[in-house]
Length: 157
Image (cartoon, rainbow, N blue to C red):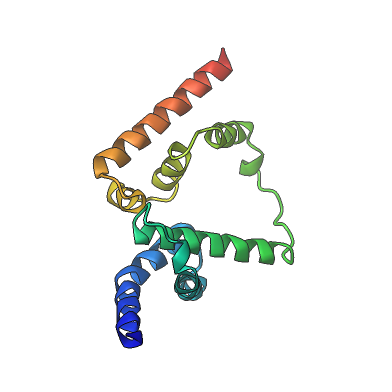
């Protein structure tokens, strides 16, 4: 029985590890760190498999674990790393206006918009992560853009 479970886990790993690794890279995680976090993700998943309720695809759950692991690592290292000098572009008030508007988008619009517009995710990848169709991903991205435009127009009135 243990051998059967081990084979099942190895199959899950083989099928999903490349996806999790690419997901981390698209989030901006350096390659070496992405490899380590991918490994950590599957260890955490194995230890916490009882918390997987099947409400989303397994790959989506694994990517969530990977994201949380990477963000926790970044937060830990951020305490030790001095902040970089502020660049001129970061002081641009128009940029901060957009950041604030994006922050006010509801989920899943905010995440879909950020992943598509800034993360260069395909509609197929977004659909896969949410366990939805490509049409859903396209419509959600379109609606997020429309919501941002509407918020910007309301703000400028």
